[in-house]
Image 1 (tube, one colour):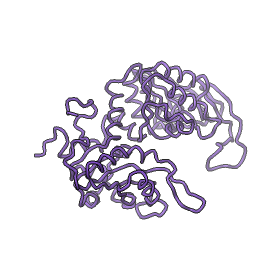
Image 2 (cartoon, one colour):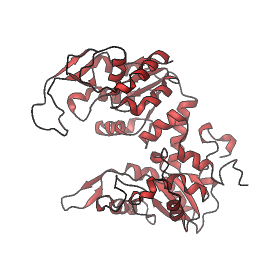
Image 3 (cartoon, rainbow, N blue to C red):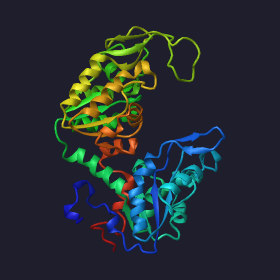
Image 4 (cartoon, one colour):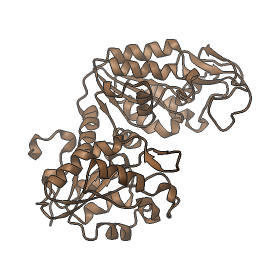
Length: 400
């Protein structure tokens, strides 16, 4: 694919075809194999869901077929900057050996604290002995980890097939979406997604907001939201969003709330009664806690999704892990799955909800990176992508 014929979002980004001849060359591939593990009865750890491994296989196989010796590297879990047997790569390595024989896998990158620190010395050690680098880890491209931003400064580099597709799809949403463009954003904390809400409000036709973050916006409108999650430090930001948004804002008009003293079915406090739930309006009685959008709101979200040309969904609109507060997320997921629009789900808990409902196969594109997809929407670029575009073999890059 010539540079001129590439989608706008991919221009300047080196692809696999931009790498030099790989025959008998050693290639380091940064993958995102941060996969869920399951402990069997005998204590053995196995990969519970190989989705992220499977998405990297086309790139790994392309490199092997090109004659390269391929070594993958990834993080797993959240070790505290040192070796932790709970997070060694053995179960992932075993699964990879089944799916991509001959591809090696290094030990957990985050066992070395220099990875998260973006340390230059760690990048030097990581690329030693390799001839080329491929980034196939979209889910960490919003981070400045040593394995993400360091290698393209040192080796001919390229975006893997899946990473390039992520950039093409999400970049296409920003550049030339089919309209109406509807975004549904959920999740717990408005602070985590304030920037992306502001970015989407300037681009989409309808912005539907649910989840815990919606209560800060409702509070900014003057509603009494009881003991629902509210970020008081973001009230002014939410007022600005309400007044400046170019999009139609869809906010909860009814919520499923939990009575004072009630608890979630799963949580740190699993003693005492679960408590009564009610469908209430935007104003909640004292100490009642909103934990899901109500049926009227869910119907409005579903109607907007059904009439869309493009849909982006990121974040559940309720605490769907507790079935009492899962109806809203289920309604949104079903609407996305059956919508005639081009549908994109931005990773994270939205994917978990789709999987739980058996609907993942009915969505046009499921991102492998929740945080990365949101930051790409917000900023239009990511540190990992910028690093690739600066590689000496990148299209249009002046090596001198």
